[in-house]
Amino acid sequence: GFGILLTEGVTDFISEGQESEEGLLEDYYGDLFITMYSLFLSMTGGINWGEIAMPLLQVGNFYFVMVIAFICFTTFSVLNIVTGVFVDGAIELASQDRSILLEKEKQARDAAAGHLLDLLEKIDHDASGTISRSEFMSAMQRPDVVTFMEALHIDTSEAFRLYDLLDVDQDDLIDVADWVEGMRRLKGEARSIDLHQLRMEMRTM
Image (cartoon, rainbow, N blue to C red; front, top):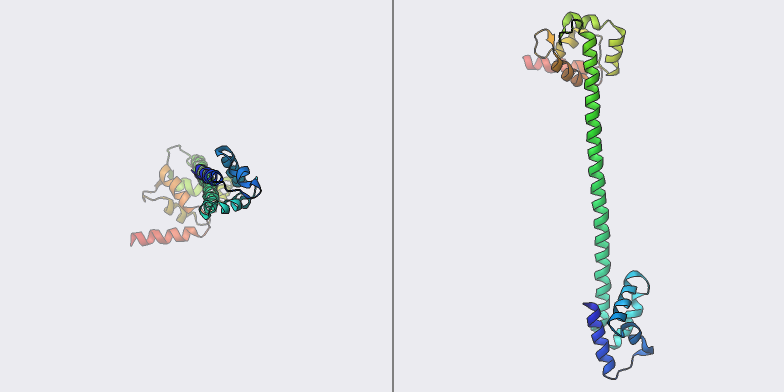
């Protein structure tokens, strides 16, 4: 690796009788352990990498460039690792947030379905599991039912039209499936009744 090449280059340079300036080559590259330690310090900020690179110009430009290459390699490697950790963390958090959101939506749908079934039981006087037109029209006169419908932003002022929209099968009976699905579909702004009435008329044309 980098440490071995640098140590060998400096050792050969010194063994040829060359003297290093102020003994810096021996201090930074005297043996493999010292070389590795010097590189570690330069990588972690314990020493300025320029301080260990400059003495290598005595040995040759190749070794000077090698230190620069080492610093670039380790810096970008660390940056890539740190970036990867943060990206993975962000993806995991986003996945958890999405799962939580989906779970909350499911819980809200289940709760809404439960409320709608409770309302169905209030309207279904004969406990037949279906709502007749007469039962529906009678329930629309009850304050508790009207309050619940208004809480869903469903206009009850035109109960006859509302019943027709909920009676998907057009058999003058609203079963559980029609009731829950129809109420979910109508839930929203009060004028959505007009939109769904228009859609129904277009389907029958």
